[in-house]
Image (cartoon, rainbow, N blue to C red; front, side, top):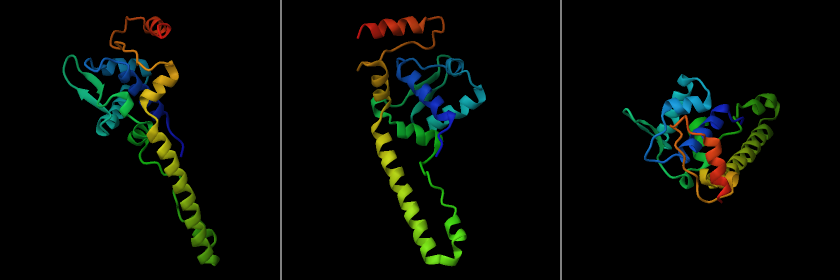
Length: 170
């Protein structure tokens, strides 16, 4: 399974929202600006995050997006499944049975063995990703328990300097 650029974009969006005061929604304009992507495509991506109840959409003049749950309750698996769908790395097309049609019993057994191997690998991968949260990523990246809170809507705010100042105070 090859994960797409959409996953990386979704993680960036979730991270923006995780570092924003949850009472102040991040506007779609800011998200589009920061991701430098197609507004139409990002709107579709945001819709997936809303449908999977990772993000909530707030309408109105001061509307935008906020996280439904705190970062420590959002797993990387949830983000992957919202954007990419269920993890299934082996799409069994039945080719083994076709290639080895003259050995049906063995072909069927080989097909089952291979499917089981990938199913187990998927299970292990999902278990690991389910344990990794957005808060864990932020902690590993920033080296601090408390997540810095910024106002991403204030485009004039020098986020880089503010972020460095916050990190120095750890």
